Length: 164
Length: 116
Image 1 (cartoon, one colour):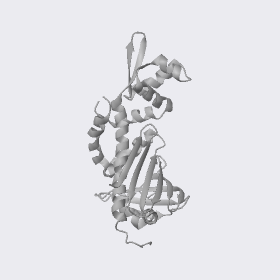
Image 2 (cartoon, chains in turn brown, blue):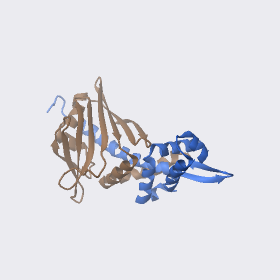
Image 3 (tube, chains in turn yellow, blue):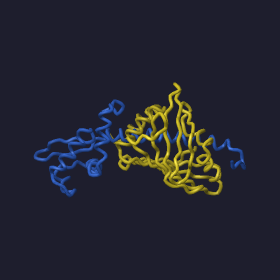
Image 4 (cartoon, chains in turn brown, orange):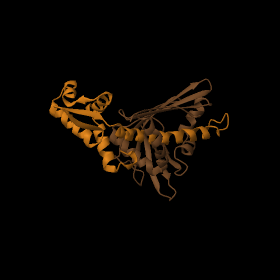
């Protein structure tokens, strides 16, 4: 199983997810550093990603669009905060308008990617932090347009875990 | 309360309510045990009136309920609305699970020794 741990903190608007891969860190890094590899996994199968700009350096910008089944394009990107090859990337996700220009009205998600090589097995940790719970709701409502509605089916299981 | 039936306005109220640190703390405190408004006011450096306003915001978002017990007004956390916040994070988790699963699949396709 790829994903080994998930921590969700609704009060801090933070989610941490950990995955392990039987590959060295430099190959894991390649999937972030090479735009052709990145677009193979970034978007869901229903909304494949096309990366148009890829400056993975502090202050750089990565831009992409995802194409829906109806041909409609959803633009987005990352404002790169810091990069430490091959172990750490920090960026802010942003949403963009039709021409790919950043939409400042929509909230950014701060994401930190940590890659730790443990002798052939690589642990990758994604920490996503929203500026506020309102921003979390706004982003996730957009995420639903990108084919994430299937996650709603988990609601029943989730509710069953909560105290009555 | 069925979380699936929250409409956009309800979701907005919910996340506005949770955007304030004091209100988040009240939700946590009131989940641990029934607390009166005056007991809450003693916990924070603010007036009973200020606490009442916070409680009203939480109440309108469906996060807590307030009931009269004798001379006290008791605040109790409503777990169903917290479930909605959990549900939001759940969707984020689903998005990243999908990405990380695809990541593993793509990783296995890179030819060994290929560093391009």
